[in-house]
Structure formats: C-alpha cells, structure tokens
Image (cartoon, rainbow, N blue to C red; front, side, top):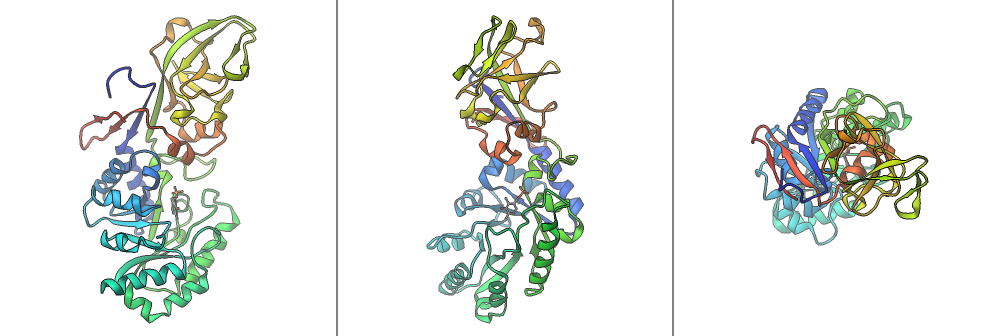
Length: 376
Ligand SMILES: *Cc1c(COP(=O)(O)O)cnc(C)c1O
C-alpha cells in the first residue's frame, strides 16, 4: 500500500491469481500451448508486472497489439519469450521489428511481401504469423491469399511461418452457429499450410470443444478474471480488487436532489456518501443512478451522476456507526465481480479493465516475491 490518504481509490492486482488462471487454461487445453494476450497494458493491469508473472508461471509466448508494446516488453523479459504483434506492421516499422526479434502478424499479401523484402535485405529468414479471416471480418487475409503465399517458395525462403492464425467472433457464446462455421473454415485453410502451429481460440475459444484449441490458444480476459463465456459460471479466479474511499457522508432532507443535473431525488431523509472515484478514474458515466458499491455486507446503490472525481452512494440502510468517512467501499471484489459491475454499466469486463485510471493506489499481490505495493 502507498502513503495513506493520497488517493481516492485503491486497486489490488493479484498476480498469483493471474498465474493460477494461466495454469487452469493450460491444463484445460493441453497439449495446446497457451500464449498470453497482454495488449493494452495487460488489459489495464500493468504489462511489465503481468508479463513477468506469466513468464514465471511458464508462459513463453505473448501477444500485444502494437509494435511499441512489444518493444517495451522486450527489455523486461528474457530473450526466449516470443512476442507477437497482432495488428501487424505499418509501412516502415519492419526494420525495428526485425531488430527486436519481434514476430509480426501479417494480415495481407502486401504486408507479407514487405516482410519478405525486409528479410532479404537483412540477409536472413525472419519469423512471422499469418492471419486469415475465417469469418470475423476484421483483420487478416482472404483464404485465397493464404493459399497463394503457402505455395510461394520465394516467400518461404525469406519468411519462417511461426503460426497460422484466425480469430473467433462469437467464442463467448458457445451455442452461436458462427463458431462451427469459423472452425470449418479454419480447418480447411490450415490444411493449406501443414507442419506449422495453428491458432484460433481466444479465452472463450479455450472453453469450446478441443477442436477449437488447435496448437496455440491466445488467452486474454480469462487470465485477468473476466468470464470467458457470457452468462455462464465463471471458472476463473478473480484478479482485481477495486475500492473507493468515502470522503464525506451527509444527511439530506426528504425532497433533496443529488449531484449534477439533480438527477437523483431523495424521497425520504437520506444519508449520502461521496466516494472519491469518478469518471477520470475510468468509472463509466453510465453508472449514474445505476449499479452499486458494497460495504458491511450491504449493497449500496449509486445515486446521481458520476462526477469526474467522485460518485454519490445512498447509505441510508446502514446504521451510522457502520459506515464512516474514511472507510473503503468495494466496487470490484468478493461481493461484486468485474462482470457484474461492467454489466451494471452497460459494458463488458474488457472495457472496464482497460479504462482503469492512473490515479489509483495500485498494489500487486505476488507470493513468489512477497507482497509489494506501488503508487501509480
Ligand atoms: C484481444 C485478442 C485476443 C484475446 O481475446 P480474449 O477474449 O481477451 O481472450 C486473442 N486474439 C486476438 C486476435 C485478439 O485481438
């Protein structure tokens, strides 16, 4: 923990739980390898800390979105860690990528040609992942382009295909018919490029039948405690604890209104606690008059709008001696999962995590290292 009282919220990130979640997925999908997706600062939780914890847990393959994220991780991880850039490379970024021994995902024939040229100029063979679109309609080359590259001996001479990959659009909804359709496309396309690892599944895909696991699973949200399947029971350990500090508790008369726009009306005399976390800390404004925090085993509704630096909570149901200024209330924790909190805000765990602000007092739980706290 940091110096007492300098921030309005505190965020605990359990690196041991991330390691446990990694091992759980690895057991589930074995013998497939689990690569960890640590893009966007490891979903807001700290790329360096998370990547190092995953390395200790045995993970040797990491995925990020941008080359800059890979370069930042290169210097804090052992060289044997393979770093893959999902979004591929813009023109001109190839030499820096090659120099850092980072593996780009080639999403088009044009990107593949540029990477092959880079290899020829460097006088070496360079590794790459090839992504094709099996039905997500986002990134990747057409299956026909994959077939052409697979038959191109000049390309093979320059590029070492480290992985063939595609991405599922509906993996968090096991019964969705798109999953079977994408799997069929993936398997047919994979046969065009035999003898290299194939990868289709994200977290949701890891909890689909074994055919979906292929050789490499790319796990993100499940490592961080988010549910890999919509609505179903969540098999993952919780990773994030988020609490806000009560700045002040005020008693307001029946008929009072609370917050910007006077959007909450007090039917009765009420006790309103102001908690020092707001939209500048990543709480969606959509939590205004929706959702709750927890304290003393009670659910306390958020009333009024979300402000930049605070929210207001109706604590009338708790006796005055059970909640006081200076107390911490739970936003994410044992009573309220990340998925529940995100659902109340009309969003998903991914967005909640990647929005977590920079002002929290951040601490990491890491048994292997002994607990250590850091102030963001
Ligand atoms: C973000 C991402 C993942 C990880 O997805 P989760 O649902 O968080 O497990 C895997 N593959 C690709 C291509 C991605 O962009």
